[in-house]
Length: 294
Image (cartoon, rainbow, N blue to C red; front, side, top):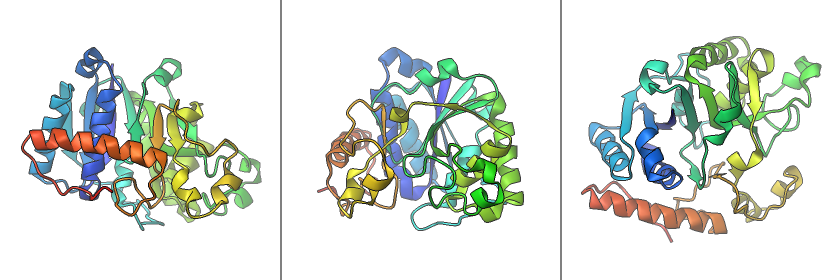
């Protein structure tokens, strides 16, 4: 038994709706009844919380809960160009709120295509399941963790993980939160990618990681290749869409629900899914502001 966790603010309400329907599509009807859905937010209005709840039930989730939380007081936003401090809410899930033995956390700017629960089978107590970051898979080879490889040379080349999809035992969530909080106080000068760097600093010094296969957090590369070839230089795999990946992650400032986002194959796939999601929303009698999809 496990729960999916999402962190949403008002800017990410619509992609959050799409994430819920994608999660439902990835599960059998029986699994949807058993799996829980948990949402943390800074600023969603009561009517928006009701919409999320009604949509979750419409697509088959029987257990849904939403709570307002505040991020760690020491949260550092080194980059806030398209990300809000709500990203730190991923560390505010608690056992009392999740009410399941396991939590699978995922970012809202994703498209779920397959079962995300398989990595739980190999997750030991004390471990955090995570996928290496495709744009900076190792410490010292990207803008992440500025100065860390110079300060601790033995860390250079160690794995660096993306925080967009995480697996954890709920009993370990307080330890993760404490570790991230410690990194934010003692090591904040090494933070560039906000909460992701804080998580990696803790993992490098005190945490334990269960590496998960790259397909579970596959970056959509086509948007970047529309603007240049740098992604080909930093990603070793083929830049072609990976139809077998259980999850596609739309990292970066250009998002598939934005009208000016390059219309790559996986962006078009996302937009098709988003249109189906908005059909559900309209059927429920709600009319949130909808992106202008081309």
